[in-house]
Image (cartoon, rainbow, N blue to C red; front, side, top):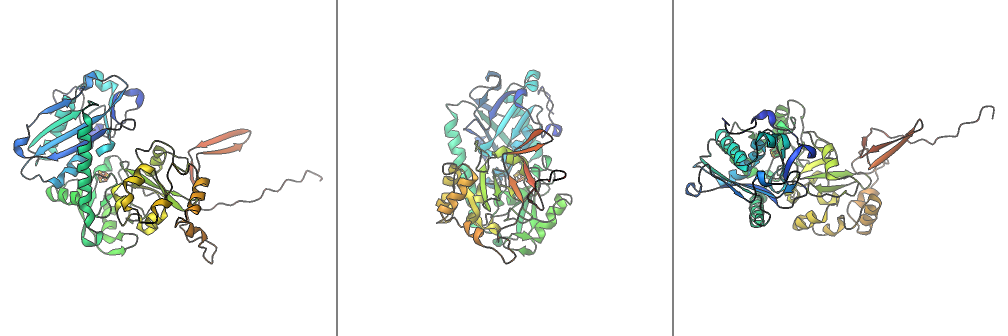
Length: 459
Ligand code: SF4
């Protein structure tokens, strides 16, 4: 099938990771601002089937060990294709390009991160034409409703900007479409199993008010995909009975999650980061992380490169969040879910959000309830938990009311969760000093006892 390609292509290579020392070049990734991938449905006459264009240097002309901007535009046509399918077909770029030996593709949309290994480059994988050919064949074979396909790769830093801006406008337009609809308005949600190759127990549930964690698939996209390819990785979920409207728990979602996760996940509460939260694969755009010291949530996005207010960075917390698990207090989310009225609804929504990077705070400003916006701290206001506490008190953040609310039992009203987070935890034992770097310890009970000085013998 791939006779002129110098490396293997197949499922076996999906999930391959390429470390920095093993990479020939990197496209996109955290150090590059302008990177994107997009699928557009075009009229038949506008596509030259099989064409692959490269705007900028080809792989062979890129310097070893360096990072470059990248844009990937996949244009397709076919009588059954409609605009609603663009988002889900776009997600397949991740899947198909990862089939190529020594080609690692992570994330989606404006977050893509690609590495080509030295080994595959030495074998002769040295042109985007080869990558494009593989993608075109896989797209046409796996999705037969695509009749024509052309692909453009952009690596020229001087020319990528207008394409990048246009892609952003299209993502925004797609996202805005689902905003008018509520979860109560529909009787069917959609599930996606695309990320199960990386996180086998991950069960994405896509509803009008809970956008997919990767930020790439809306409820409308799910509906279009399940309609055209009912046996594909995106499938319909009958909502069933509403078991808890505050937390967003539905009998149909629970049944589907149990089947799709092979029994690992039997309950899902869509609007909470506690209890039975939505699972997190590794493609989430951001993480809502619980800060027990203030009983609120911080939010960090993938692109944020500094440490957050709890001393941990995105990638450290991503390790605690990912893998298809339900982790209380570490919750994978998309930016579009942050615009939803159901965002963390059961936990208090924005009344519970205490910290987030300024860039995202500005981006979603109009979706944060009036009166709360200025009470949420950013990296410009505070840099550690004591400063955050002071900020929240000074700004009378709603979360501070939880600190005062004490039940007769003596417990605070807030969610009781024994999580201690700290960058370094020193332990001194047997003459050695052991430092747990970026440790996270969960305990059912913490007992603090005073240590009485021992009486000297005969004293
Ligand atoms: S994050 Fe969810 S919706 Fe997005 S590709 Fe993965 S499984 Fe599908």
